[in-house]
Amino acid sequence: MTLTPSFYPLCSSAELPEGALAVPFDVVYDGEACRAFAIRYEGQPQAYLNRCSHVPMELDWQPNQVFDDSGQWLICASHGAAYHPETGQCAGGPCRGGLIKITLSERQGVVFWHSADNLQPAAPPIPL
Ligand code: FES
Image 1 (tube, rainbow, N blue to C red):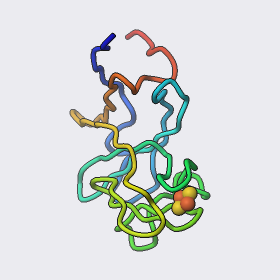
Image 2: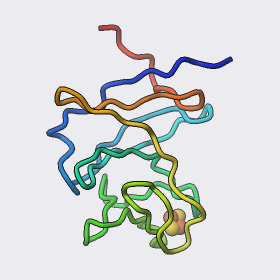
Image 3: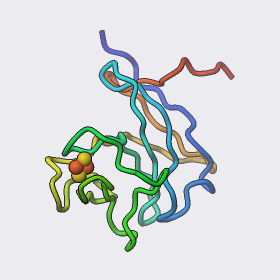
């Protein structure tokens, strides 16, 4: 069965400033509850599953701190894997491949994340 992609409000644009702490959210990926995070890099919002490709651990030891000190790389606190913030691709360290990207869109001051066949909300969305 193919589910129709939908999009869900994640946060306001103001809550996602350039290079700041990530905004966490919960999803179900391939039937498994997972954490995800959104960041802003070079003006664009980006989101990924919070799951390192080295060992499936969350990247942040300090809550929502996923950027390195330079603000140019997403860094896994466990063993130092570095990922490109725009693509999630491995840029160094022990990562294997990249982070799993989640599609975002932004309009009228709101950032939305998009579901997919294998990516669904953690809880049923609240009807408006
Ligand atoms: S778990 Fe992320 S670098 Fe090892």
